[in-house]
Image 1: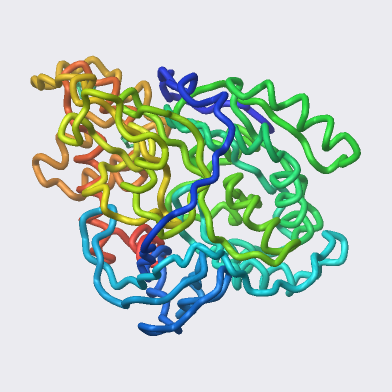
Image 2: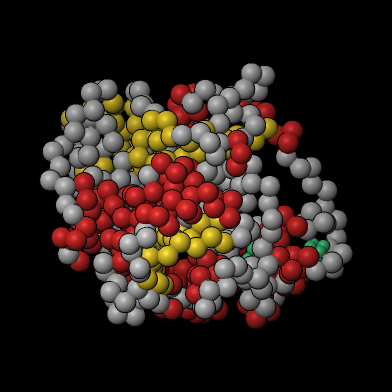
Amino acid sequence: MAKLTFPGGIQLNGEKQLTKDAPFINLFPEGELVFPLSQHIGEPAVPVVKEGDFVRMGQVIARADGRLSAPIHAPVSGQITAVEDRLTADGTQARSIVLENDGLYLEIPYPPNRHIYSLRREEILAGIRSAGITGLGGASLPSAVKIEEADPESVDFCIANCMESEPYLTAGYRRLVESPWKVINGLRIVLRMFPKARGVIALPSGYADCAAQLRELTAQMPHVQVRVLPDKYPQGAERQLIYAITGRTLNRTMLPHDIGCIVYNLDTLVAINQACITNEPLMTRTLTLSGRAAEAPGNYRVRLGMSCREFLEQAGGLKEGYTEEDVLFLDGGPMMGRPYASLDVPVTKLTRGLICIPRHELPSVRTSACIRCGRCAGVCPNRLTPFRLLRDLEKEKDDRFIAHGGLECSGCGACTYICPAGLSLSDRIDEYREQLLKDPEKTGDYARRYIRR
Ligand code: SF4
Ligand code: SF4
């Protein structure tokens, strides 16, 4: 039964007014584009091009290596100039293909468009796989795997996750405003795989202005519902969303299809629609550039491989008076986003956004001992008691950490945000959890699920 919300969570200042009304602007990279071979959870893709090759836009430049891997396509035409190690957003070096854009955008020929009603199961799966689509909400799992692993008869909910509950990010909202049909059709394609499922388009109350249009567009689709959920962080997390829509609970040893659900982020659904209808692969990301240090906060359609520095420069750069040293650059929102190791890294399928926060705006955190106020437990969406987990990990009491549910932590950051003592609860619990998951003897099904990830 729909609860439309979940226990715990926090209200955040979304800062979405900075970019919500900014329509997408297409950016065209100049010079080189870089494609790390690992942009998904499985084995790195394998290059099928070499230095000196000419490639067209849409052409495969690296093939998938196994079912958890995904191919990579050229988003421009030009010449391959290297296959070498390059820096990525997390500061590590990764084998990458380097492509010099010739500015001509010469495209491969695509097969004729297809109609949703003519699509068969194998065609949909092949379309998603060959387009290189991975979970664009951050999961990075090749998107066909969710469908392949689920029993078509036992899935009764396919959910379009339009929550975008991180502050600053509004590219999902712009999708709903500018191309709602692409989201709806992506969901309809997924629904073709699950004959007993109903589709739910879930969006936050802050995006309620899109609900009327979505309802109108789906009025003749009795198996598709539009649900508006209260704005609360982390309502976009898979477990919290499933609970809000279905009342069902999921733990971290399970997958959504174990409880009859398939969840796709709205960007992923748009990519699925494109792959199955127009046969085009995943070549761009729609990203928000925001933060008070950015000259022109907005929403941008960015080709994969373009450097974040060029993205920022083409989008107006930093406001006058700011240098790069004055700014924290975040890949994604402030709750779960990660600082960019450098701006000289490419936009990839994993990129969540480019948020430029002036360092003087960052809260100065003074830490003290836990005062046992219990607020962290009150906001934990997974009903954990973070102060107790902190005590367990500080004493290296692995068994107690596990018994107190530490492996269920999703690293959402709500406990850190609320803690009056300024304790980095989320990071510390999440790091400890990741360490424990390397030991299947101790963590059983959790470790098996983690390794498969
Ligand atoms: S980071 Fe973990 S412990 Fe903290 S609120 Fe989120 S799920 Fe709970
Ligand atoms: S919110 Fe911070 S101070 Fe309060 S109980 Fe949790 S850890 Fe302790």
